[in-house]
Image (cartoon, rainbow over all chains, first blue to last red):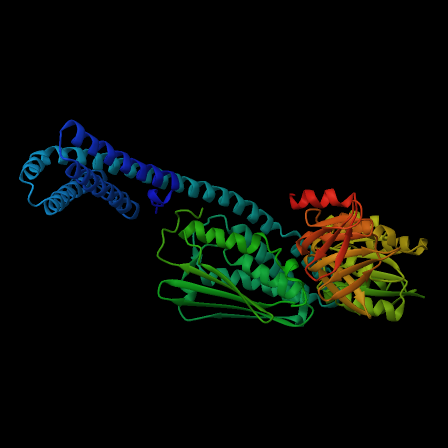
Length: 355
Length: 243
C-alpha cells in the first residue's frame, strides 16, 4: 500500500498554502470585482474552498487505501463526481444557513451553483487523477524494488547453494572422521560414507526450486544431523517431532537448513557439554510452524554470538520476499536455550518469487 | 620421551592422531582435551613438549589458548580451515595439517618436529591472534588460574604499563601480557582512541572532558574514573567525537 501523499511534508505544505491562496483569490474576486458584500464574499470564499480542500484530501486519502484492480479510471471519475456533488450540496446548505435572510446573495448563490460545480469538479477530478497516478507510480516503484531484491536474493541463494554444496569444513571434517573410522570401526566408516553421499546427493538434487513436502526436507536435515552425531558422538542428541499432518505441508527447499546449521554452530561447535537439538513442526490452520531449539554457551559474550550473519538473515529475507511479511521468523532466548521459529503460510502462489 | 597433548573437539580426530602416533613410540600422549580450557589445564599440569591443536573449538580457539600458555611447547595445528595456515606458520608452528591428512603427511610433520628444537615464538602470536575473525570482538585473559572472556565493548579503558596492559571493565581490572600497540591495532579505531601514551579510551564511556594542565585534558568516564588526554591525543579524540 502506498503511503498517504499528504503524510509527506512538501505535499502537506503545498496543500495548505494552496487552500489559503484559493480562498484569498476567491474572496477578492467576489468582493472587488463582482461587488459582493465583504462578509458574504469572505465567508463564501472560506466555506467554498475549505470544504473543497477537505474533499481533495478525502479523495487522496481514499485512494491511498483503496484502488480497484479493474475499471480504475472509471472509478476515479465516478468517485470525484460524486464527491463534487456532495461538496457543492454541503457548501450551499452551509452558506444558506449562515445568511438565511440575505435574499440577493441567496439568489446569486443559486445562480452560480453550476459554475461552482464545474470548477470544483474540475479541481477534484484533476487532483483525484493526479494522486491516483502518483500512487500507482509509487506502487510500481515498490514492486520493481521488490523484484530487484528478489532477483538479487535468487543470485545470493545461488551462491549460498554453491557454498552449501561444498560446505568445505563440514565435508573435510567428516572425511577426517571417516579416515579415523576406517581402521578402528570399518563398519561405521562405511555407514558414514553412505550418509555423507546421500547428503551430498540431496544437496545437488535441489536444482528445481519448487516447494517440497516438509517430510522430505526433514529427511535431508536428519542426514546432516546424523553425520554430526558420528563426529561428536554422545555429545549430540537430536529430536525431530512432526505433528500429524505437518509432514505433508510444503516448504521452500533449504529454508530450514540455515536455522539448523545455526543450531549446530552455536549449540554444538561452540559448547563443550552434551547437547540436544530439537526440531518441532506443527500446523495451525493454513500455517506451517517449525521451531528449532538449541542450547548455547551463556559465557560467550553476546557480541561474538551475533556473527550469525547470513544464516537467519537469509531466512527472514526469503520469507519477506515470498510473503511481504516481516513477522514470519522469530527468535527467542530463554536461559541457555535459543529457539528459532519459522512460519510458512500455505496459501501462496508457489513459483512466484522463489525461484 | 616426547610428551604430547591432543586438543580437538572431535573425538574421532584425536583417535586418528593417536593411531598415526603408533609408529612413533618415542611420542607419548599424556592427555586428550576437548577444548581450549581443558587444554590449558592439561598443559599446565603436564608441561608437554608437543601439542596437536585444532583451531576452531568451543569457548576459546587454538590461537587464543596459546596466548594464555606461559611456556609454549612445539605446536602442530590440525584443522579443516585452510585460511589459518599462514597465521600458523607466522607463529612458527612446526607444521599445519589440513584435515583430512594422510599418514605420510603426518609422519613428515613429526619428522620436522624432531629436527627442530625451538618452540613457538610468542612474539609472533600477536599477529596470528589478531587476524582471527573471532578475536576482533573479544579479549581472553587469565585471572587466578581461570579464563575470562571480555567482549571488547565492555572495556572502559586500557592502561599501559611496561610489559603488560591493564584492561578496565565494569567487573574490575584485568592484566594482559601485551603491548599498547597490540591493542591499538586490534581495537576498532572509531571507538577506542589512544589518547595518551599510556591510555586507550572507549569513547562511548566518556561523560565529559575537562581541561587539565597546559594543553592536556582529563576525560571523565561513566564509572567515575579519570583518564589523562595528552596534547597529541586530544585532536584524535575530537575528530572521532566530531567536535
